Image (cartoon, rainbow, N blue to C red):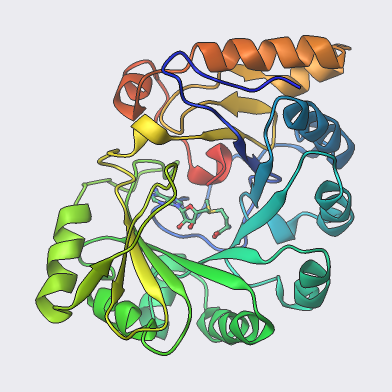
Amino acid sequence: MSVLIDHYGRRLNYLRLSVTDRCNLRCYYCMPEEGIAFARKAELLSFDEMERLMRVFAHLGVNKVRITGGEPFVRSGLMPFLENLVSLEGIDEVAITTNGTLIEPHLRTLLHWGIRKINLSLDSLSRERFFHITRRDSFEEVMAVLHKMLDAGFELKLNCVVVARKNTEDILPFVALTRQHAISVRFLEEMPFNGGDHQHAASWNHKDILAHIQQHFTQLEKLPAEPSSTSVNYRVAGHAGSFGIIPAFSRTFCGTCNRLRLSATGELRTCLYGPPAINLRDMLRAGADDSLLQAAIIDAVSGREKDGFAAEAANAAIHHSMSVLGG
Ligand code: SAM
């Protein structure tokens, strides 16, 4: 087995796999409300193709996969794919990022397969603001599934994209939620990936978010983080859960980033801010064998930029939606 190491000595062992570009919500920071050009079915990697590629990645030392999208659970056939994925040799961990609207019927099965780590996207604890942000009235069902997941023993993180005049009043209630619940809330800076005309205006950065929390919760403990963690994590003394702040736009974590992204149409990115390095679907459909695919991935990794700023400078098409990039 080989491992993927980039030009700057970073080992890449974590893949985010987007299984669809479609979503049943329309979060303003991610997608325009209408007029989205979704990929045609034939353009999407089939689940068989994904499984084959996951084997190739596992041979290259990728041992952690996060399933994302779009909303993963809108794609039919996801569950049989996950069942196969968890038993692939070399894959130690399968995690999921979801908006929570469609996962409920699958909770028991996911736990049974050992899929315990779920990132649930939730930008507000107010039904009105949730509706304003997602353009869908799904707040009650998402809150219900959040509590079900906690009760069932999932390791739950909440992803909350913080933006001025949208949801900054939710920051303190989210931190308060960690008092009784063993949950980790992660506040993200907004990134410029919305696929439409929403103006990204880097409003609250990671320092603003922390300063705001510190004004109200004075006893914060900084928590040790994994070397490749993108979040800086804290616990309010006495709270059961914790919170983290992800400088997704400020990009202070690139030096230890261990992530690769594979889009639903086969584009491999070595940085969220960069262009695709290669399209693995096209190679696969042109008949490439596993060793050719491996060589192409190694080559893509060797061309990885130093950080998200350098990758952005090399990218002409930064306006993609996160649902295309694979969040
Ligand atoms: N549909 C799933 C969900 O809602 O979690 C998975 C896909 S979604 C694109 C993955 C994550 O990307 C979500 O937590 C979402 O909040 C985040 N995201 C999307 N667009 C973003 C943006 N422009 N800036 C920051 N985070 C973004």
